[in-house]
Length: 306
Image 1 (cartoon, rainbow, N blue to C red):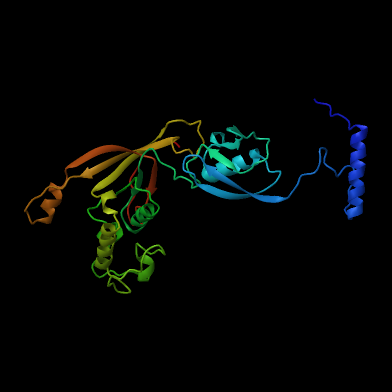
Image 2 (cartoon, rainbow, N blue to C red; image 1 turned 90 degrees about the horizontal axis):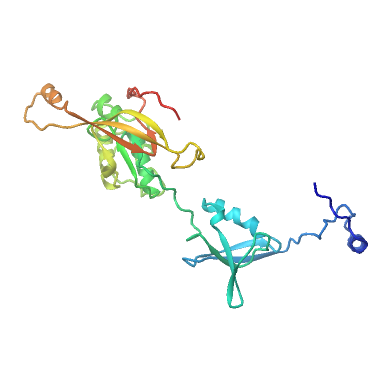
């Protein structure tokens, strides 16, 4: 316990003088309403913070009495970094000095960062998208739009489009939703599609659309067809890290790939039997996005703990 020192006679006189000024200005001030040590100024100004490495700068509106310890966590949260890496350096005469947390923030150079743009988080392993149907392809297109290229799309069948359209639909099946909302590139960031498709496209129209968009927008290099996910398990690397940490855990995924055997035999039954050769591989993924579709029977995965 620390005993607070009682104000001296001179301090009491100062407070009474402050109260008299408040009464003259029309404000209601008492001894209890005056902060010990003075009042905080709310006068505002603009400061310029510049990075050391790139020289990028931002203008930040602050109050005169804003301290370094108030600005540091705000910048760290905005950039998604640890606030301990930030230092605020000012030029003083012929040398430089680091500002202490208790000092008022001013125009200075900030060390510990390269720019004022928040960097995208990097996963230690690729992201796995299960299913190359409409939703799986939309997710892949969204990743490419955001500049995320470390992902893989797997599907158990031999072409994009999903089981619902490739296996379950027939040539007379038509889309029950208006065409516009079913375009893969249905987004303000992309140009209006000019492909000649009907308002109610058929199964073949949609499959051709899925294939063409996957080729035009660079999704195909990320797709593994004839690949079935048969098992997955969670590997915990450091359970003491926060749940949002990207390196806290990852997934081991067992993928079974069907190797196609080329044969001139025209009998479909014989061809299906010849395509039974399979290869099993284990891959690591930072995250799993399931888009198998509601008409696709799910695989039985072993029990795993999160």
